[in-house]
Image (cartoon, rainbow, N blue to C red; front, side, top):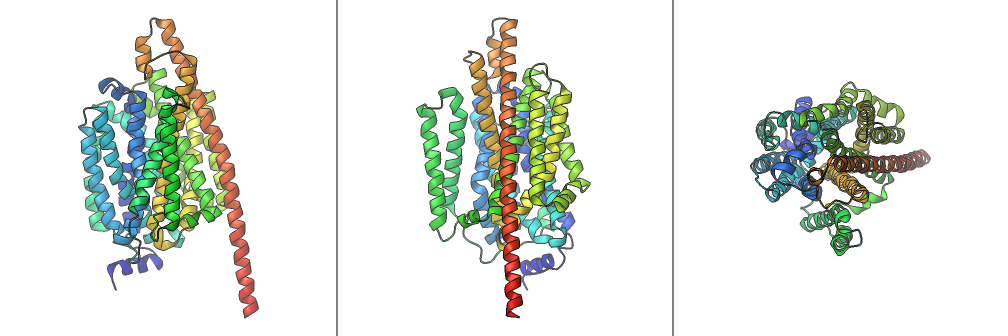
Length: 512
């Protein structure tokens, strides 16, 4: 019996004996990767002044990381299933550490964007293997709880980035938000090599490199068009050309996946309404959270004048709510008691309500922190109950031998949703800001510096705050409407599965 087979047998008969310790190790690795989705947000003022970064530069520093990850996650999942999840996890940690070193030492916006893209390669390998390992080492009786804890760390990574970044920036220069990853990556690498069992599917499919290339080109081009829209005009060649390239590349990706014998994404999964509902909800939850954090950190620092640490502390209730609900078991209990569709409706309604509260009660130059606090707590509650439900729905709709692919899909949705949230809500902000004030500056600090007097500076601040409020409301509407659609699809899929089970039981009874 091979080590892989033995590990799989353990998982099937009660779980790996060191499963909870292993879960802690892989969550540590995952937390480091996910923190880097949002940790950069509190460094925006520092990057704007020290590297002379424009708003578009900042968006690309954030999106380069998430887009490279989302483009490679599916291929990384296929490779992990075939060649071994432990091997890919170790390689991912090493690459992520090297990318962090390059980012921390960058001295230009171009270098930092390139380093962030390199970090995304290592992050892709990490993200696919962590959830796949969870699926392998836990049996059915503990898997929902394990996924809830895994999802808590995932959400904490997104939500805790501003706080961690604020603490670091209060004592060091911006490069330390990347260099701090290196010792964590080293510790996690040693622990992975010692503790995590190897597992793979010997009949796994070979990596789909053309599919990875097409998906990365398509998503990058579409988001580039969204970012460029407010600056160049939505019907300009600078926007329409990349948008067309993106649509064509994604269309070619879908056609290629339907005809290649080794697709990285089996397009037949999209016939499953449970799968479609879960991925739609997952994208929109992260869309709302990622876009909101991008906007909120700028509101706290640019409009209200908080230092990075002060801004991070004021955003901490989002992360604390997520952790509190899931570590106490409340999140998983809600899923098991209500079922997946009602839980998705409840969670995404809370997220939308949180975004609305931040916009209407905590927005503007005179908004109260109480309104912002209420919004952060509501968002945290919504994410805590909906994210584990949707992750479990995605993984349970995919064959167990394709756990790496399933984890890749789940990770792709999170990364793409985050990048899309930053791009779309950032575009709404820029469009609203440009419509209210006539400025040629490419960032708020530059616009304020170019203002002739205090009245102009106040007008510019008010316009920026108005743009932030509009963007949050757009995010709230998208999350709420998407939650209703996702829950309806999940409900219909459950009824279809129940009907099929009854028919099988009746057929077996008749045959007996």
